[in-house]
Image (cartoon, rainbow, N blue to C red; front, side, top):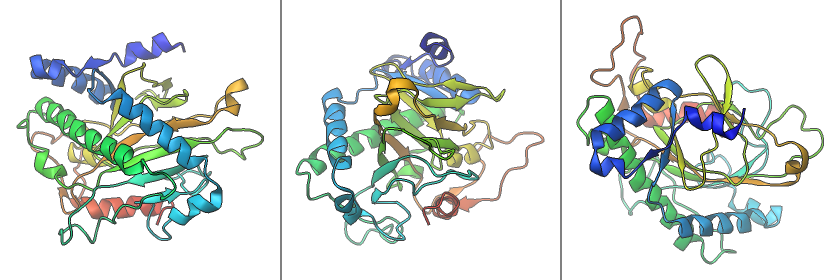
Length: 315
């Protein structure tokens, strides 16, 4: 499948449309979300210079010696903060570990905040002076943009535009700095990221410098999902899919191994996983009842997250 063929399935929707015609913006995004669980957004407003600097900072960290990076691995921390080493994470129900290493940045909470027990403090790699100024600034920009996308989703679902604002306020959202090292030799059946659905509400994903992301259609076909330059991919997570009783599907996706000369290249990406606040009760939203589809039992966002972290080998 060519890049052009792929993009016909995910025509980018301009974020500027949300200001001029929010109903049309919501409808265009909703159409793609309901069919694929994914959509592409152009004109997202994130500072490209900040994005470029974040990639540079991430690459600088992952190039550090293994023993240095392991200083920031938090044993029994569920990968929530700091460094998670290569070969640690495994997709739910997968047989092989993923070929990746990553770092998680989370929300900074003031002392005494009620969610302190559920959300660990951030750690900073002391070897990289510009870390907080770049990485944490991008986290904040992603967090704000996620709220804008949720307003469109609420509109498409027939809810009040600001319905999701309280559900994600002080949510347990994380930005993941991902490094997939060069793939050379026998991988033992492992790929960069096995087929999986995301845990959270929505994921915002900057286009990676290397291809490989694929999305499974309802017909079981794997199609490429590599946003064009300057665009963002957005996909549904399991939490929001559960809230909508499957109206918005959390689609299986994966990152396949490169071929030919590209096996010598690393791949970097930066997904932002927007989460509900820990005590939010995930249950079927108004208007999302479906004939013949039994709603799942209500569960708090924290309980759901903890279950899934155990399933993917991080707890």
